[in-house]
Amino acid sequence: MLLRVPEHTSADIAGKRADAAAVFAGAAGEGRRMLTEVEAKAVLAAYGVPVPATTVAADAAAVEQAAHALFDAGHAKVVVKLLSKRVSHKSDLGGVVLDLG
Image 1 (tube, one colour):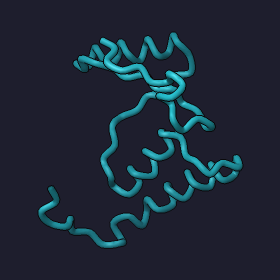
Image 2 (image 1 turned 180 degrees about the horizontal axis):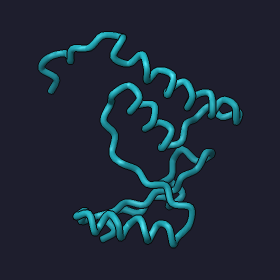
Image 3 (image 1 turned 180 degrees about the vertical axis):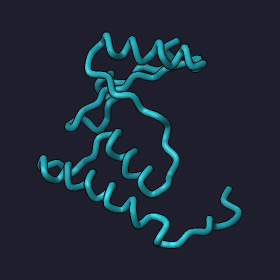
């Protein structure tokens, strides 16, 4: 529950506004109206919203390497998600695998 409004001024996020605008411009430049999860997290982070760390892996070997790195860092479980510029509901296509460990 939010008990008080965090103190800030618009100057706090002024430098990050350009980062968020660049993400939007990139998607728009590709003719997209939807951000990927990684892009959406980048916009949220630009405005100071905490987001979980995300690793992008290009193939199955990179996924395995990233998972091992997370396990070595002490994480007990890993989630793998499809990264697509066209699919918004990844779980509908089986594109989310939970609780790998």
